Image (cartoon, rainbow, N blue to C red; front, side):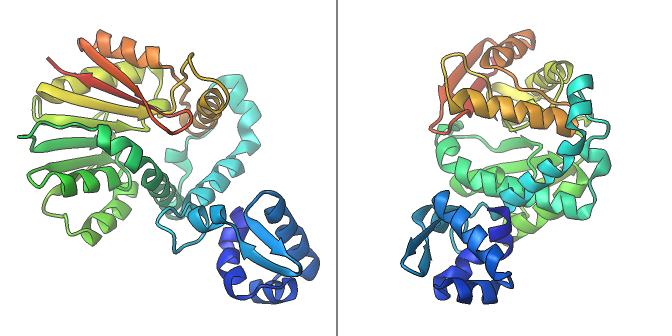
Length: 310
């Protein structure tokens, strides 16, 4: 899949239907084209009728650049993860990688990361944002580790009075600015560079805080610190929205498998972990939150938790 998207293979198949035509246009050896197309056919991304090939419905949805649900950038990020599995054995022994991606990423890796997370967000948004309920008079949201900024962008579109602040590493915000500018929201979305655990953010200033896909990248101690910090940031009756690949004892199959795989990858990236819904509840209560609500999403292995301030 990664190689097919890199080669724009599905776009080529749209106009060059036979194997020799596809091989020539993609610059592939004929034998390689046969292997690749056969693999894509068996995995359901290509259909064959006689000697002619067409992209399947799944390929059109997820793997063609013209689709709003394109995941090609996310596949490049997966490839980046696999490249770091060379030291997975060492990580599994020590519980942390020999070097984190913060320390090892160059500009190209940061670009792959941000665009990959943006692809993933386009899949998550229709499931997540309808559950983000803000007060009618809400004016401030803080997006921790917001990366691509897509969640803040969409919330600002839905709530005309809302202003957002995205806090992330400067290497990521370089690309975030591009997305914010493209949507014409630079006046309403501010960018704060730095580690959100270390930055001083105004107390009692936020109607809502977003913590989307950040819990799994932190140690238990840092998550305890995060929830205390968020508690101090929220206005009365404000909400901390947490979305993560959480282990849920009620789930099975992919609902269990995906969080565990994410846990292994995050341990190998930054020393992160796979946590449970109960872990989030415990950190919330330790920070002084009394109202914790969990909701299932129609996304395998992904959970939504709303933590409300007094």
